[in-house]
Figure 1: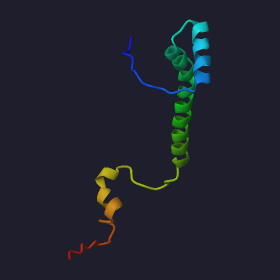
Figure 2: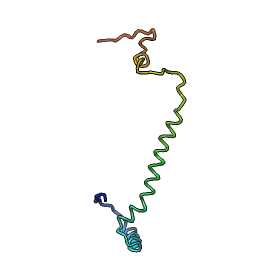
Figure 3: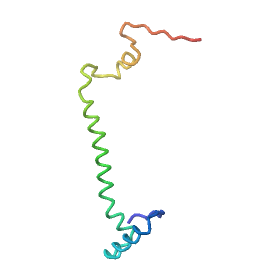
Figure 4: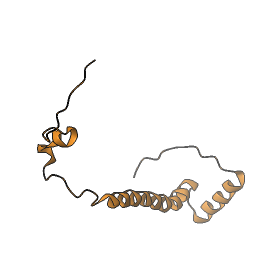
Length: 93
């Protein structure tokens, strides 16, 4: 069993009374009732966010049509243009 984390949450008196009534009906502490009901909602929100990130990455798939098989061997060319016939000059002031 995980250790509990104690926190303070402020509710309106009306909501607190409703929560207490439902918790009593289910014979659970209010904290457990809140966790039981909110866990699936939070899991769903996190999953939707994850899917959004992966959907965005999927849209990027295929936008690069040319490249190299081994960028580590030609990293300077890709980053700085070295080896492609272009000379780079550093300016020191």
